[in-house]
Length: 371
Image 1: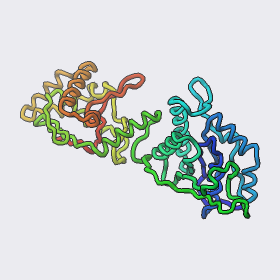
Image 2 (image 1 turned 180 degrees about the vertical axis):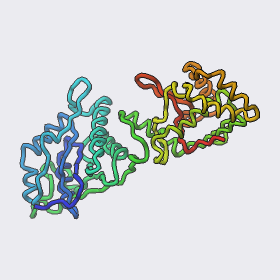
Image 3 (image 1 turned 180 degrees about the horizontal axis):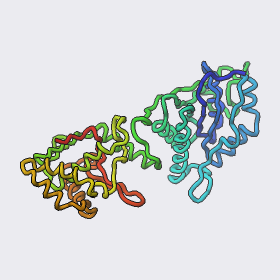
C-alpha cells in the first residue's frame, strides 16, 4: 500500500449528483500523481436526488473497494458523513437545484464549506469543478477565488470521449478492461483574493459587493488631499471648499484612519471598518485637544480662535450636532464628486450595528494627505 509524502491534511471537495464518476476519477487521478495524493477527508456537496445516486454508487457497491485493490491504495474516506445536503431556513433538505432560491442555498453551502476548510493552515484543498450543475461549478470556483490559498488546487477531470457517456466507467481498470482510458486532471489557475482583501463573515452577494468596493477603491481611487489653510478638499484634481466647522469634522475623521488603524502592516484598508467609531469618540471632551489643534491650523493667522473653540465646546460636541455636520459634509462631497465608488469612499459613512452606529471614512489611509 502506497502512502502520500505530503505534510498537509488532504481534503477533497466535490459538487456531485448525476455523474458520480467524477469522484472516483478524481481520486484515481490524484493517486497516480508523482508523488501521489491521497484523501484524508472527502466532502461531497449535493442534493437529496444526488445523494441517492451517490450512495448507491459508492456506499452500496464495491467501486471504491475494487479501485483500492486494483491499485493498492490506502483507505478512501468516503463515508455517510461525507455528504452535505443544504437545508433551507424552514429545515427542508434541498431536493434539486431548480429555482433562484435553490441556487442561493447551494451557493451559501459551498462558500461555507470552502471557507471553513481553508481556515486550517495544515490542510490542502482539492476541488473538482465537474460533477454538478453549472451554477454549482461557478460557486465552487468563486469560493476558491475568495478563500483559496497557495497550496489549494482546483481541477477539471478529463477522460477520453468514448468513456464520458459510459455509466459503468469509474476509473481505468487494469489489463484490457479499459483499454485506452486515461484520466487526467487539468489544474486550473485561479485568482487568489484571500490575502488581498478583508473577507467579511457574510453571505455570497454581500461578499461580492464588499470585494468589488475594495477593488474599486484599491485600483481606481484617486488621492484625497486636505489643505487646512486654504480650507479645500482635493479629490483627484476636483477641488472644493468646506466651511471651517465642516472641514474640522471631516479632518478629524480622516485622522482616525491613521490613529485607530489596527492593521498597519496591511498594504491597503480594503473593506475594513475597524477604525470606525461611535459618535462619543469625536464628541468627547478628551477629543477637544485634537479638534482645537485642527481648528488652530484652519485659522492659522488667528490663534485665539482655538481658545474660543475650546471654551465654546468644553463639554464636548453633542451627537446631534455631529450628525448635522456629517450630513452637510457628505452633501458637499456628493455635489462635487459624481462617481459613486469615489463618493462611497470619501463620505463619512454610517455602519449600523447593534447598540450604537459607528462612523468613519472608507478611503484607503495611504491615499490621504493633510497639510
